[in-house]
Length: 81
Image 1 (tube, one colour):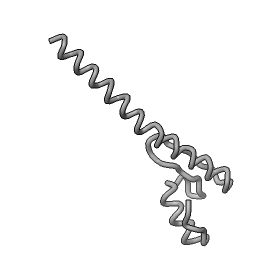
Image 2: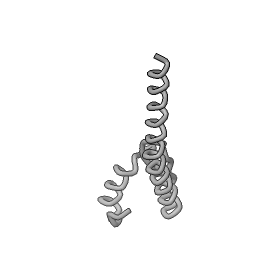
Image 3: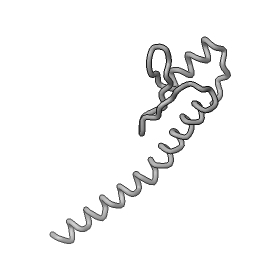
């Protein structure tokens, strides 16, 4: 029984490390892009870990992808990241 518990614990640790190795770099990259957008445009942004970048608008915080589509339509911005 003890061997079975040790096996499950080892599997849990391996799975946790695997998740961190997959999600960590992706989360860091999204955070970097969010900070870079704020630096380039001067618009306030905030990064919500494991979620999305938000841009502050007159109506409050808006998800970056929704804001980008609205900005492209209303401000004639280029549709590139």
